Amino acid sequence: MWKWDYVIELLPIFSKAFPVTLGATLLGFVLSVFFGLLLAFAGRSALWPIRWISRSIVEFIRSTPLLVQVFFLYFSVPMLTSFAMSAFVTGIIALGLHYGTYMSEVFRSGIDAVPRGQWEASTALHLSKRKTWVSVILPQALRPVIPMMGNYLIVIFKETPTLMAITLVELLLTAKSQVSVSYRVFEPYTIVGLIFLVVSLIFSFGVRRLEKRLLQRKEREGGEKR
Image 1 (cartoon, one colour):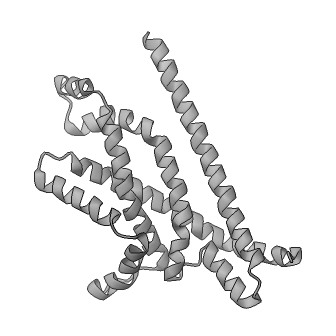
Image 2: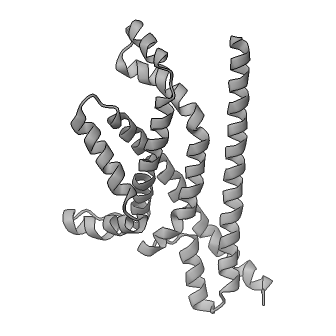
Image 3: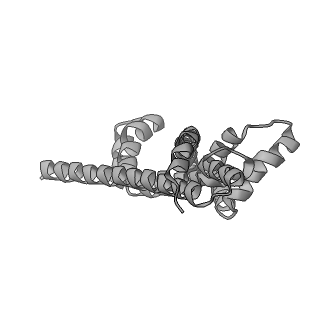
C-alpha cells in the first residue's frame, strides 16, 4: 500500500540528491559539448594522424559501455597514475567523454551542412582560420543542431543512475538506500521514476520550443532574402 506519510518523509531526502543528479547532468553536458567540438575540429584537420586519432577515439569510446568507462576512470586511473577523483568528478568526466563522441558527429553534420560558398567567401576576404570558424562557420553550423544537442542533454540526465555504481549519491542510489532501511520498495522507486519523468518532459518541452523558435527565425530570414 502507498503511504503518504512515508512519501513526505522521503521528499527532503530526495531534494538533497536531486542537485547532485542535475549537477552531474549539466556539467557532463557542457564537457561533452567542448569535447565533441574538439573531436569535430580534429576530424577536419589537414594532418591525417590527427584525423586518425580523432576517429579512433570516437570508435573506441562509442564501442565500449559507459559503465566500463566509469569503472576505468574511478578504479583503474588512480592505480595507474596515483591521481584519484571523487565519484562526482569521475561521473562528469565519464558522461562528458562518452557523449562527447556522439556530439562530435552532431557537430560534424552541422559543419558539413554549411555551404561551401561560405568557406570560399572567408578565404576571399582573407579571414584567419580562427575568425572563419568563430565568426562564419560555427554560428551557421551550431544553430541547426541545437535541438539534437538538447536531446543528448535528456539522454545524459537519464544516464546519471549509472553513477550509483561508483557510490555517487544521486537519486537512484538514494532510493536504494531508503529501500534497504525501510524495506519499502514502492514509494522510493516510484518517486525517483516520477522525478526523472517530469524533468525529462521539461527538458523535452524546452527543446521543442527552441526548435520551433529556430525554425521560425529561419523562415523569417528566408523571407527577408526573397
